[in-house]
Length: 479
Image (cartoon, rainbow, N blue to C red):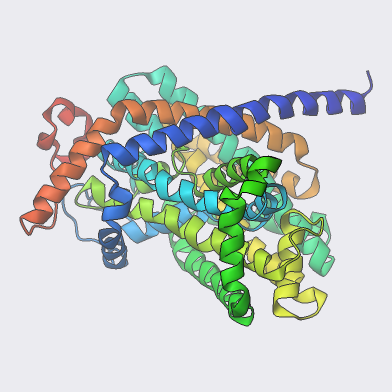
């Protein structure tokens, strides 16, 4: 068998395995867990939205040193929030949403909204647990699923397995995809050679990641809000220019999600699968990635960061993904055979009524910032978990160089096979995390009760390890 045939065969096998894991097993378990946590927390993601927003506004300033706060090197809740948003908001918000609509129809947007509303409860639980079981690092707090699996479930093999999977998925596979998307977009819009883009990305990545989590969080804090607001502004302009079609678009979304014709034709199933799948992949609720960022924040109570990270799910899906969806649906070209990032580019062109270069240029710039901040945040997730396995400076430096090399390679090569492997490792990583938070979720619920109890007494909630005495020795940051 020649190399090409072997590659095609391997790609077919990987595609089949990843299809079963992501389209059926992972989506089903993620959705079931989201419903379970919505019930057990009594809809925390709905009844405490006001508190989420209040906490995020207050966290814009560095918190004072209180319980759970180190004497040096801490980062604010807002910086941790921005770091997690930097990972969530990426090519999936522009290209992924376009693919969902192209393959699943407008009804996919409705199911993206549904999974965001439900999945926010899973995000609350995993991020609250990350705060509860975090520990002090050299420059900031560190934590995440590997840490709460080890401390809460006492299963090091399970924790190490998760650490390896998230490093492979985010540190390498996803970063390859992000750099490849940047390279293709810049090449198509500005005719910039792939090799030049690859070199610049590799150098920029090294400069930022060598500064540690504080430089990463500060970079994200500045760039993420700016790029998100700019992109949403474009969407609002396009909607305003097509405001008379807005009721029609909303009816199209709902009817396609539930309509009789769609159900008879089988497209209602496609809309649900694509909407849930793309929504889950975009907001990462339950995957186990964002808890690594949530753990770094300095707060007085774990629930505070859990609520802020739940708000991150809404920011990603209900704002950024919806912005892309409205751009595409307002354009009316979603059935013209285009897909992915090309559909988004052409939709902006059509929506603004300008020349063909407008959408291509803007999306290329947006993709650069969305994807590059994702590269930086993805790197940090890998570093945290490598330190968990073995806190060795040489190992971290090797990892940094490897990430830079992967970013370079990703920008100059085809990544169909890499996407398949990424789907597999991501699905396995997600299942590892979901099993853990289903077993440990009781602690998040107890913390939520404690938080609300203190709020009802007019207090600014503060957590101490003695509140849950059976795990006090595993929550040393809260003594």
